[in-house]
Amino acid sequence: MRDRRRLDPETGEVRSPAADPQVPGAGGAPAGADGLEQDEAAERADEQGVADVTDELAASLALAEERLGDLQRLQAEYVNYRRRVDRDRDVARASATTSLLEALLPVLDDVELARQHGDLEGGPFASISDKLEAALGRFGLSRYGQVGEVFDPSVHEALMHAESAEVAETLVTTVLQPGYKVGEKVLRPARVAVTSPA
Image: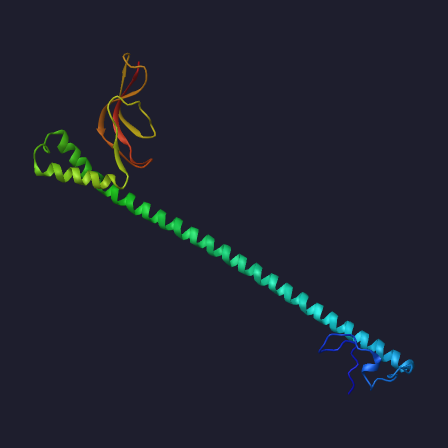
């Protein structure tokens, strides 16, 4: 079997006809028609080899591009998943806190009524009620609703209404039950009596 490649596979250099003694026409004699055909065949084989390598390289690049796209999509999905999990965790925490605070509102109402009637003054229950309100305040719970505030239907619930020429706008005249907020979210509106201009 004869090696008819024009490029030496070991050195990468172009072979001369004299380098291969088996090729007809070696030693300076004209190769004739068979030698030309063999050279052309060798060139075609070399071109075919280059084309094969180019096709294989193009296929490898396409595969690498596809894998990179898959990896980028997977990374984007993971980032979105992490954000969704963090958001859901925050929502669940806020919901649990809100539910607990809403359950304790009747207890706070009783504490406020006891304070208004003077039952907390000087007694041991006064320090307990202060600690309870301080602990709930750390979760963002705040009481609102004062006499003299301008009536705001988004945070007040008017249970009684009167008219007077002495007021220029609708004001809270009596707080029947204080309202509570967590941050800016209203847990329970303040139940009030209002007076509006006559």
